[in-house]
Image (cartoon, rainbow over all chains, first blue to last red; front, side, top):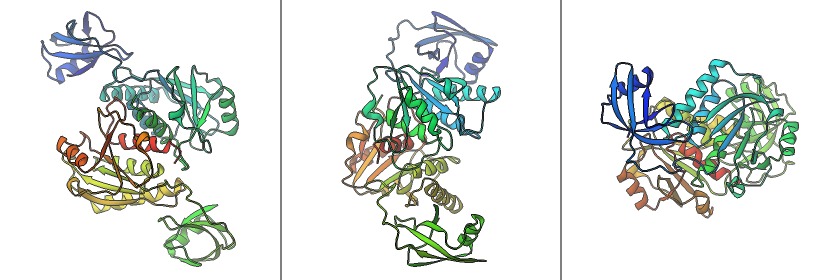
Length: 231
Length: 231
């Protein structure tokens, strides 16, 4: 079944020109059933009732079963990641979306060259998150949040920090009682004082093995470890 | 300490023009100590004794301590991966090297478009593995092996296959008694008969969570899960 994002799930859903164009490209005709999702966790089955130049109408299929949690983790995962050079953030956003994060919080850190991210680049990262959510059949599109200085970062629940020399395993710490925030540094890592600050705020250090990982590989290894527990 | 690959670790090591040029670019002078490694697991400390136009000489530092296993896993890990489109294999080879694989066996599979890989492309993948090994400070450079049809693939030890619907966790199966082979499909996955064939040969199915992962994300998630156990 085709999947379509709608602004809100409702008994009757009216689509704008862009989504209608998308339906027409897919050659969908009235009577066709679609999986609709709002990008915030709600998902349902709808029937296409009208499709015309520039507008289309969908009705909720009330006969369809309610959906379960589906592809979402038991508690939301935030990836708090330093600004990275070049196009590396795009790769991280794409793979992190597939691996189940709900928020991507960009960070300004001591060792990162970039102090900010352009508006266009942020729009692009958000589009990548949206496409990746669709491709991995998630009903939540991760929010990509504007960069904040590391000193201003706060989180609810558990904070985890991959740190060389730590022996603790991420899988031993997962209890899903609270949301999870993964802290991931820039090329060159977090500075010592940043690590001290994060640990002072309760972040727990975990291992990713004895090898040096690039800044774009470490968060995916960490998310892979979580995904491989089956959540 | 700088790291340098040599063809063989010996009491006296003579470098060719290319490696010598590399030393000159790094402005290394006689008397300097270097970490040398042969890309097959051996590693030692050496002293640069001569460096001249086109050749250089190193002597083993017999006073240096013998090295431990270092950054290598307790048993070798082979990533057997289907040929992927575009430049995706390059990204997989780079990250898989960081995450500790010792061999990358390319596979020809039913759903992959490519039936072969050009000689130049293979050379490039090997160069990427070599660079990534250096950057992640590994002493083993993973071998990138020419594609074989899936039907001809054999492995020693444990074979693991990420498969939707499986509930087994990779971390519950790791015992490091034998080598490990990770089986990773193309875009579109292994075909049903390929999965049956692999399972018939003893491959165990494991989960990577309920989301659809791209062919280039799945192997890294799996390797990340292994690395996050601290090996």
